[in-house]
Image 1 (cartoon, helix red, strand yellow):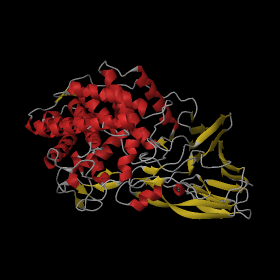
Image 2: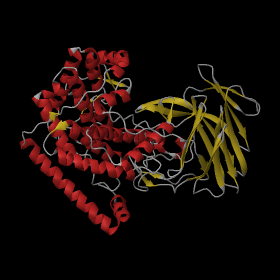
Image 3: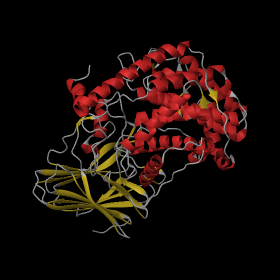
Image 4: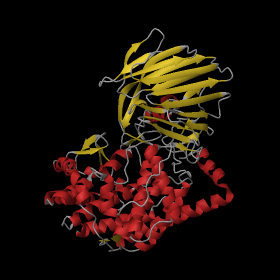
Length: 601
């Protein structure tokens, strides 16, 4: 049963009129959902794949080697979800949790009623498998080679899923977002197979299943939430693409509904400078890709999204570009390795072939995002990210994917990650680890006195959040950039982060004496302790022979090298080093200088 606070807080947030509208939306969705469950089984409707011009295959051919390597592994039933193996030729493979070696009981589920004493503990595992992330690889191989064996394997997997997942009767029908992602993968696969000369999409059972899932998705859209999140974006984007690629009953109505949601949510769920309000880099990438797919398809169909939509999408891509280092998005907040749609090789080229060219591009000028109060600064081959602003979207009671990481820098020097975010590790089934990876001491922020008073809500959201942190100034020069910030709870304490060349400096100033302070700098796992100087400086090196030095200025009482758990991917953790510093009654300046290469004090 939900707690009293869980019931009351949303009503306080909404106010009397908002509460009435919220109840209205809940009732409408419930009735729509119930009608769908009654109507779809009686209907004989199917989905018909529409005809549209195919793209150029030439830009796709350089991907042949990497595509075939993965496709051949799939023919051998060697598959990966996240970084873990699974098989599709087991008994009931689509309801099987390979972690716990246990099946999900076959019954009707909803997102509000998932885990129970007879189920595996983390639904994320089975859902990831059922997103069919790698299915597109088989169709990529079929298009590039013309070999029927890849088409037959893709067909086998889809038919196996349909047979094992009766309408609304398994765990894989419980989430509209999961249906959306699965149908995007199926759709891309079936279009590529058709272009390869294989009419897999015309199989009656497949056409029927696409319709059933599309109807379910349209009825289960998350429009009844107090705080809409990436779920609604992903659901609407998937439905919009489906309605413009397939023909089935009510698709025009569904398409219009999806368009309206996308036009509204791109403005509501991002700041005016393009940064996500969910306080997580990976989910920003996730929703940016969903919006981009919808934008491509709408333009191809000669009904483009609004100028306001496209302008905000361009800014979202700019923010995503600012967060990208060495071709990968740096991580802060929750990161669960989710993709709107996945392709081996040049993903943009494959999207262009299938859905049309992108109409918006990044317009990167600098790394300061003033509305979000975040800085993602690239200086030559070095980088620093610092965030202030809102704790998370929705504030107390919500902020589902936010971590307690105010003014917690992520630093690269010379292209190498040095100070990093520990990651996410898990969502469900391990409350201790979930809390540990989200908390204040898991990040690189400054802990003053008793520290953060934010209180986690398991397994998503926060009962209490911190007041907004401020980035009071961001300065740029030809050689360096400086970010100055302050947390609202701090009285006379400020943090300055500077990056330039192969050097970074974290400078904390205490105008008034505090009871205590703690610093943590979580190092990327590649760094191993090499030496400690007489002055207390710390040297680290990696296997390649690179060196990084930490030099400390100020009256630190203790300097320790400890270990922490770093999570590079969901359900993966490895030991790494963290520098832990303390000071009792700190006053004045405390500084940590980080330099790549030989360093003298």
